[in-house]
Length: 124
Image 1 (tube, rainbow, N blue to C red):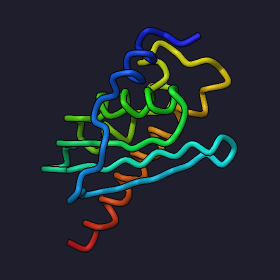
Image 2: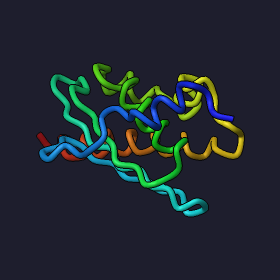
Image 3: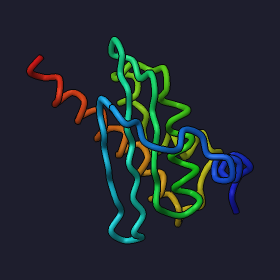
Image 4: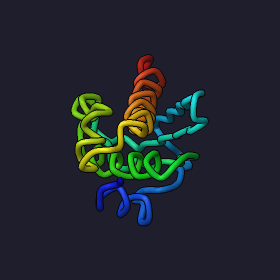
């Protein structure tokens, strides 16, 4: 049912936690399944230097968040904004159709964190 990559990222999630002095934070939830994902990031010279997540949800949601952080770290904000929910699922070698909504949380939370960062820095 799940790919080896999904199982690996669920059992050994990368970048779990919160960044205390984060430059941007985004949190999204899915009211249907109750899953929520919070992403915090550290930005230097328009590049994501650090990214962490906290996910309350199923294995697919946790694996998607873990994979997303691996995909986004080191990317410019513009490059990170191009990462789609489908990209995350593809990097995990796919998700079962009934779990595709889980991958949506990760990318959406990161996009929200980037918007939060941009809004905080718009006046400076």
